[in-house]
Image 1: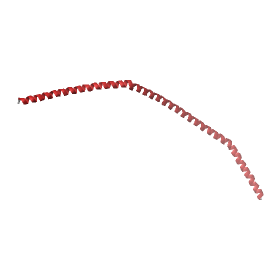
Image 2 (image 1 turned 135 degrees about the horizontal axis):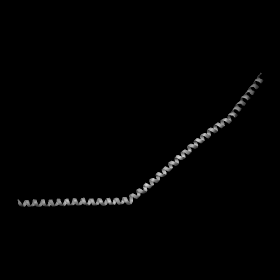
Image 3 (image 1 turned 30 degrees about the vertical axis):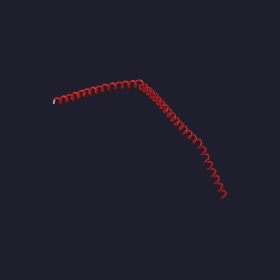
Image 4 (image 1 turned 90 degrees about the vertical axis):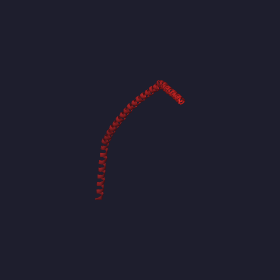
Length: 133
């Protein structure tokens, strides 16, 4: 029975040693993973500082320029719209004045032509009555 107990103890000792080795390997993997994580984060921060920050500064400058151009275009559009509206108002006023002036001047001519027509009809009508009698 001592032989069997010795073998059991030997196997238990081997399993304990393997468990300690597994714990050391897991601990080493954890430390290694943490070191890789720190290196990757340092690399990312370096890339961010060297590449991303200047690119973002350029993008922000471009966006500011676009904003300025958009504002200028909007102001110019408003100015042109105002100019067009005021020009249209002046054209409408001018058309109204021209229309009233033309009516005033042509009303005399139209009245004269109507009176002449009535006179000619009266002459022609009285001429037909004189021939008819």
